[in-house]
Amino acid sequence: MKNSPSVFFLSAQTSSGFVSFAPSLTGNQPLLLQLYCGRDADAFAALSQDPLLEDATELYLSPFHSGQAGFSSRDGTTVLVGSELSTLPADLPAELVELHIGATPPHLTPTQREKLLSLHRQMIRQKERHIRYLSAAASLLGENRRLAECHLDREKLKRFADRFCQKYLPPRKSTPGNESFRFLSAEKEEGHFLEETARKLAPRLTVLEDEFGAVSTGLMAQIRGEGLRRGYDAISCFCPVKGVGIPEHLFFPQAGIGLLTSNSFHAPQRRGEPRIRAARFLAPATLRPYRQRMRFNRKAARELLFQGRQVFAELLCLQEERDALVSSSRK
Image (cartoon, rainbow, N blue to C red):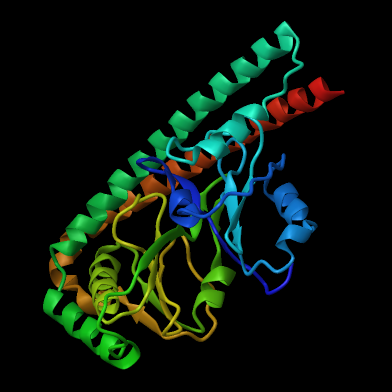
């Protein structure tokens, strides 16, 4: 595919359930929909051979548990990538949902249909289990963030945010910029972080090393608000474990700058970017009595996420069994 497309997780399973930013991409555009079967690699292969997308500059692929529903935008058209019986969010355009329903195999025997429905119900239960693991991990990490927030030097944080905006975000226009939302990471059979996309979005990156999340939450909120006020468009990227709220990664493409949060759950590789240590904004002496509890929370959260990924692997096995059943019904 030409122009080295940027790739996002447009939808993701989060600690608060399935979240999709698909409507923000489609908007009021006329829809041209195509359905592809298979998982991520198959969907990419199909798209890369599609002459319709030869000149695509952005590809939004959304790996989700039962069929990777994704969208690609080119010249006012929208293309769906997915597979049969994918769980799609309820607020998608009616044409898309109709196409999705119409893709259900029509020539199943009663035994095959019952087996298909059984697999579908098992997949739903596995998704619910996965959400429970994510939400439990989010609760533990949220406690760490709240403890750290109690010992945060907010004045120092605000002064840093002001200096950052003065240096990188001079006033651009009188009207506020627009904000779009994406995911750069996803919790699948292993953790995924789309680092290459981050580097394509902004040539100048600053990496904030923040294990607890309190500093990145405060800093991103201040810089995001000020950047939008100064007329810059922003891309806010959320963490699936924490859910949708304050972005964990933030980009201003018009200024060519971005901020990444680095921690043990997604650590960008070192490539010479400026790095900010969150400890400079925290009071280590007053935080010290809570360190043991915070270490325990982090270790327990890591174990919960591992268990969640095991559930996801089981879910993929169910998906493969379902896809094999659908394929055999076509022969």
